[in-house]
Image 1 (cartoon, rainbow, N blue to C red):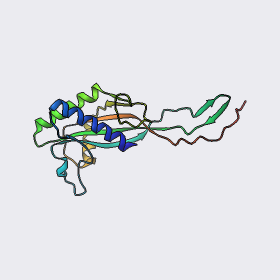
Image 2: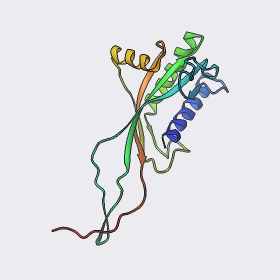
Image 3: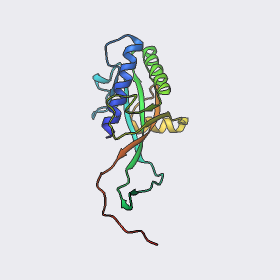
Image 4: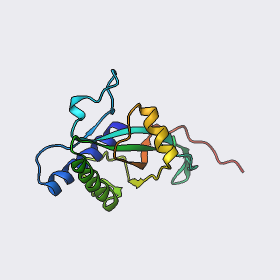
Amino acid sequence: MVDQVLNRIVEELNNNLKRRLQTSEDLVILGRILDNTGKIPIENQDKLLATLIKLEPDTTPRPNLRRTGSHEAITNTPNIFQMDILISAIFSDYQEGLKCLSESISFLQAKSVFTPENTPGLAPEIEKLSLEPLPLSYQDMHSLWAALGVQHLPAMVFKIRGIYFTDEDILPAVSTIN
């Protein structure tokens, strides 16, 4: 599910940049900033790079009792996750990188909610994905770049909420306790 969500968002960003910048080239890719040798791969050059930096469960409690007529059934509650993605501009032309990053931020602020209705190809089990910019302090940014092993790049972090993982099995019905 994580790969489907991120690939869909990258595709939406690419469609927007192609339209806004009048290019046929995909300018956004999904991946790691550095390869296993600690270098920026050639395919990451002159691109915006979307990188998953955190995946965690949303701990908001949710009921798992479903009523159907006079019966009650316990269902597996979907595990809902949220993730943080880093969108970095890795461009040899600094100004071009800033322009692409700015266009992407504008797009994600204008379309901060992704649904199957406004995003064709989004997994049907996803009711809604919401994106919001995640402000990081200088210390947090420094820690992030150090953890990634990269010098600072123009970038923005977004939190994505609403990623569902579930098994559709229904557990046997239980009687109501009085």
